[in-house]
Amino acid sequence: MEKKLTSRQKQAIATKKKIYKTGVTMFKEYGYHNVSVEEIAKKAGVGVGTFYHYYKSKLELYTELFINAEDYFEEFRNIDLTKEDMVSVLQRYFQQYARLNEEPGLEFAQMLSNPSGRSVLEGNQDFEKQLEEMIAYYQKSGKLIDERSAAELCDYFFVCARGVLFDWSIKNGNFDLKTKMHAVMDYFIAGVTKR
Image 1: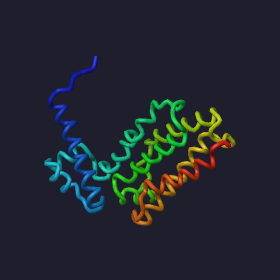
Image 2 (image 1 turned 30 degrees about the vertical axis):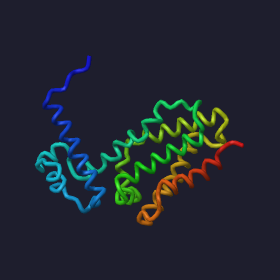
Image 3 (image 1 turned 90 degrees about the vertical axis):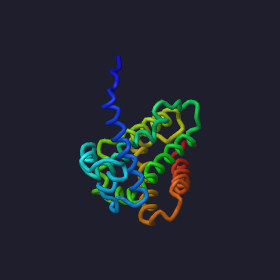
Image 4 (image 1 turned 60 degrees about the horizontal axis):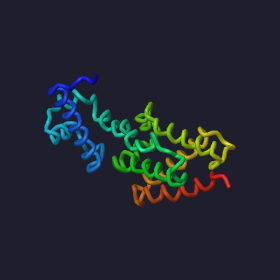
């Protein structure tokens, strides 16, 4: 039986959510480096001490954007691959990947382009395992080439996707990320589809 939350616990959850949403909004609008903990706390209507009760630092709040990455890929958890077109599924997956990187803002993507900034992803790559499992299914069903393992193909997909993301970040977001991601993935998917 599930234990009911007390009103105090519900309030704590609501407060953390409010700080998170406020921070994300401010990061998108002003950029990570242009927002202080004090400004986030003030805009969220909480004290600085309350902010630090829920987050050790501004960076911890910022990296929670990627900790919540699994939410972007929810639809792929229990997808019935037998009922959907492979290209459509893979394209949707990488549109979500583009969205995941685009929504926090260009500065976040630029931070991830730096090897030291990639530490925010540690232990948070279940969505990559989902892709690997889909690739393995498509290989077994004869739709994708099987000269490479599912893990290798998954890695190649992400090399392409990260390349698009890197290009977008070094060009300061001067093109539509989702459109470019779709075009690049079309070429790659065509190249690994069994004929």
